[in-house]
Length: 426
Image 1 (cartoon, one colour):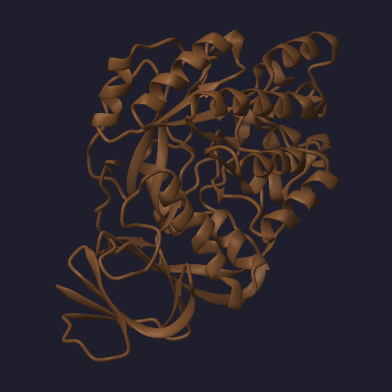
Image 2 (cartoon, rainbow, N blue to C red; image 1 turned 90 degrees about the vertical axis):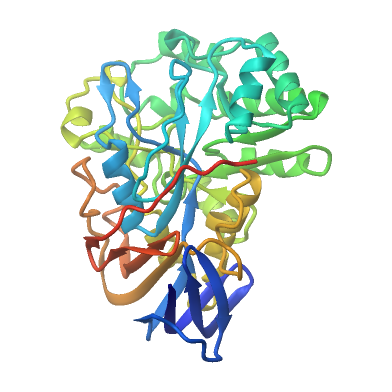
């Protein structure tokens, strides 16, 4: 079947132009103003047509101590679909060996979490199954998630040998544990306990290990302007990429001092206002590789019951807001930049073939957005946390329609067809 999307402003990684867009079955057939015979027409007059975007860092159905995220995979992928995100990469815990494979509302894949030393056959198994990326922690020793330096080096060598990708949560565990003993475990003290040097030291150390082994290292949820500067300075001599998240661009540590401060807790924590502004400016200048959300949603009641950082679920719900936030910070003639750091670049880093941009032969993951009256950003209608951390930000955009693999999956608030698939990344 051929679907014609007419009169839209087509946003690709290279620019914006008014054109018709033709979809044939699950692929993009053509981007042209010439007439092609079609079976179904979608009118995109006064709308912008984007490729379906990619969030390469989400946590759905995550168990964090006694807490479990409020989003399961079904609801989490609904949030993504209604927000213009058509591909997500979640995390497969070390304790889970089978890769889930069933239809969802959006396309999905996994990074494999490693919390113990493993042998080469283990790495080969997941790469062969289409999961080439592995995640480690340099902290959370109390939870049993942290690898020591020797284990990290061994793992880097195995992943490099088998042409995989290593993701790392970079914080110095020893400094954090020592600070926990010295400082009151209050919410406002979180940025002091996880002080900036914890991130900088761990990034520097792992980058050195990665350079010596030749592995592709990807740093997750970078919070610091200084971290960004460090990583960018290393790119000339090694394969290293990184991401930041909306919370580090739009929120700062002053939120932790409010009565509702527990709602804004995440690890690594929010940083000071000066750092936030510098990181935001650098983001606008495209000095950061990709935007992810580190979406990790717990209910407002669960987070507000916390008395200190030791009985608190960490994480912020951002999946339902990241695209809208981006739409509101770029001028219309610069909207193509969104495609680069939420489409083509994450697809390149994480080997997501034929997605993240509008071009002939790519999969037909498409999002149509339109402008509306300016107002405070409302809570995503399918969010389960009970709050929107970005509610203070003004919004003038809304998601109208989303196609996934050529199927009309979402239209004006209604979910129509579950056509997302497990994506093998090679």
